[in-house]
Length: 149
Image (cartoon, rainbow, N blue to C red; front, side, top):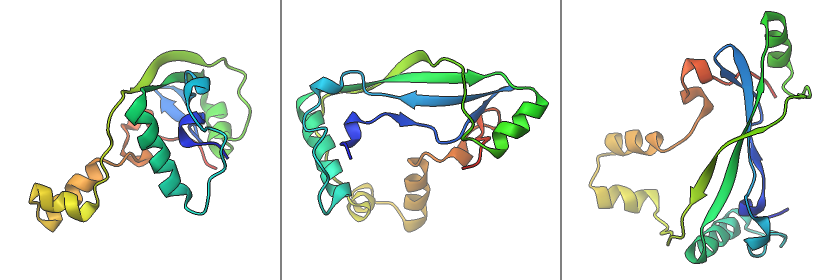
C-alpha cells in the first residue's frame, strides 16, 4: 500500500453531468517528489497516513491533476451504466484543472477542542461539523451519483 499523497484518487461511481455521466480521477502531479510513498503502513495506518501528510506539507506543496472522463448516454445506456458502474468506458480522460495543497503546518484539533475554542453549543457544533463533510448525496441534482457498486 502506498501513502495517501502518492495515490490516484477517483470516483467509484459515475456522477450525472447534465444529460451525460462523468467520472473523475485525481492523480498526483509529481510522484517522484513525494517522500516515502512506497513504505508499508504499520499497525496504525490512519495515524501514520495523517502524520505523513502533515510531514510532507510542512516541507513542500503537493498538487494533483483533476481529470474528467465524460460519457454521453441516451436513456437505455443510462440505465445500463447506472446498474453496473464497473462497465469499462472508452472515453479519454481530459485534464480540467488541478487540486493544490500549499506548504503548510497542519494542526490536529479534536472535535471537543474545536467546539470549546469556538464556544459553540452542541447543536451549532453538529451543524458546523457536518458542513465540512463531503458526501455524494449533498451534491446538486444535476451532479448526483448515478452508479451502484
